[in-house]
Length: 137
Image 1: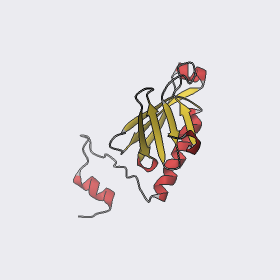
Image 2: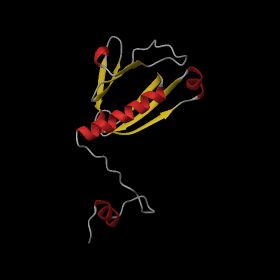
Image 3: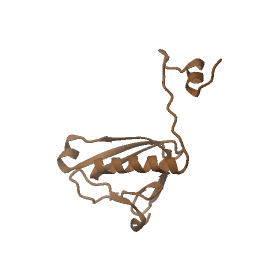
Image 4: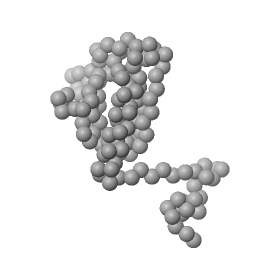
């Protein structure tokens, strides 16, 4: 992960906002990266168009020091759930990430389908799925 080629780059910060950790986050035009470790490093990446959900949380300490944690759910097999923890300007990063995800979905012609649950027992019925997909009996 080269910092120079990233459109966003940050480190995981301590509770007080200091970037003294070995976890690095970055985003280029089409991917989100997470690099962890000092002696033994591990780099994971997820394509932006595979991201399904992005949410932001801030506990009281994070709010005091201007930090936040972004939670990401994706369809990637290796990186289904990802947390970008204790980063500065988390509101701005979340919005930038959301925008880039939509751009990448359009560019790659990928659509995200959401299945709505209408059944009381928690299972989608065949009729619900057929009506969702536009099929008739």
